[in-house]
Image (spheres, rainbow, N blue to C red):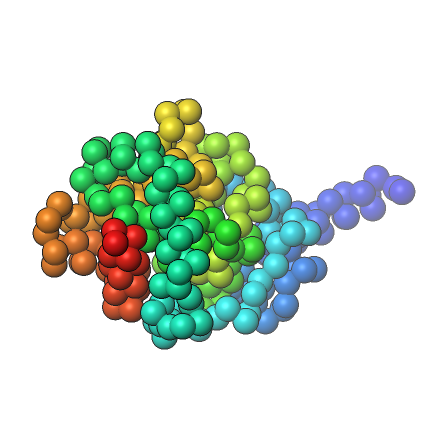
Length: 264
């Protein structure tokens, strides 16, 4: 190839990078969403993330958008329904087994944060059935989908995505390795990234916080509830603390009902 041709090719490539801030991801994204993805990249750049880093993430073969999750909410969920199976003998037996297996971890959390161990166990049962259903979606993909496609939650999702990327950068983790719900929550306790940053706790003192371990999930739930107003013996304040965890009346009712069943 002649020198002049090389210069021309380089100039064209440079122009492409200038005009298309996320040109590398175009091949794997529906063109209808590409403008939104480019805007997201620009927003993340403003928050301190390098364009090359973002291009590497969004051009990864594991990156994809999930249009089918757009518009979903958990508001219609009835946690007390028979289908959910919360108060069956089997479910309660499992909860009591968790109370026994993790009694030292739960006792420490109860002592340190003043949150009843049965409430902690109830939340972990309702959220993920004690870790058996933590979610299969790469959280990065879920949050990016909402940031790009869903106008109603785009600002929130962009902020959560920035938190997720910061967590992965700090811990030197692959951002695609964290899997969770379609809504962007992960771990046994189902924290969104901002909740992880604010309330997650190293429950076993191993120097790292991993919400996929029971010790850290237990301590983090207790810390979250105390931070949202939980006080020993305060009925209404404690219901509000659980409501802060999940803004659903059925959820609050289910958590307290399961905790009560565990005490019998």
